[in-house]
Image (cartoon, rainbow, N blue to C red; front, side, top):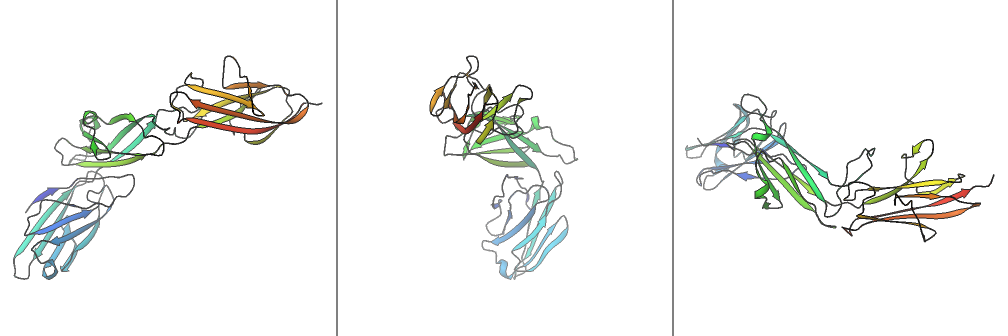
Length: 327
């Protein structure tokens, strides 16, 4: 009997994977798909023979002593894993047509790892969404493993071994015991990066893996009205046609998903335009402009933000302001 501990693999999206494990050339080859399942995952056991004639053999496949498939020429069987940290034993017994017997045994221990990322980009503090990743920006990835020992206790993440990969390249310096955080430069525009983390116990008997594809997103600019009584009106950005009877209108630009820490950083070049002509912002705040319309009319208000350290980061917005200050 050959006892083999399978890797436990968790992925952000389903990945078709089949692995084979050290089976003698004259025996039966046993593979699992997915090759290292997480908790409550459907698993397919596949059997094949090298010189062993499976088609004429009597096959029995069992999991933790319970038969899940039996018969002549059986080549596949399915089962569902249990909870994280609950080991399962897979046993394959085969009797050849000439009476010779072959047996293989596999062991799996379901485990999983979540992989999240945090982009180094700006959004308003009251923004409820996730900060998206602009092109070529710094990004931090955090591995959150879920592993249990044989006694059912959770394993300290700092005692696990982390192997980080960018594509097929192992990031050796960023990998090691307790290194569950990875910081790197994100992909350029129109490109993507696949980052994988493989997490294992010190004895490598329990493992999990997860991948994520980083894709850069377009930076955005939105303009809001600052009301003297209600403050910044964040319900919606100003788009389309906006009607106002105010004699003084204060507009505030908010950048989203730029590689900045504050909205008025020097690395962000801003431009206001009114009817295609440049307009002056407040001296102390380049992202704010005060309008004092007279009479009745329509003006097209534009705003543009451009990253000076990364020309790939830019955002534009505009709207029609229909004003009427006549009493």
